[in-house]
Length: 188
Image (cartoon, rainbow, N blue to C red):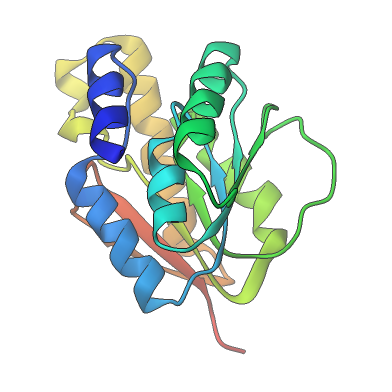
């Protein structure tokens, strides 16, 4: 199932989590005994289906209509236990209440990671974690990219600093996949 969706994503140039990143995500789900996930950034549904296959209930945001259609098609085909709920809205403008989650997985517009974190961390259970993907952004360096990409790299660096300095969370960065982090609330 996942191999078919991965093949589709690669064929259509849809960015999905790397194999190493997916293994990291699975290990975190098992280690932290994650049951409820909020994913920001569905794309074609690859990571949502993977997390559901590990036994998680997944609520996932996607704003792109074409991606929504593809994800729903994949969920209809492979989510036979109906563990995934697609929320077809921009996560930044969504204003309805959500339930509480063991894991918030951020893998959407890189320039908005800080806003996603601030907006949705209130739905994180006390002992929950936030995982962010793409924090290395293909190991690009500012001296070898265009101005737009330089700005994006700067925003990613600013977000990583935000996580490092956050007064309520401890964050660990991992050189896995395209760069990942796990943030957990500090014990009081």
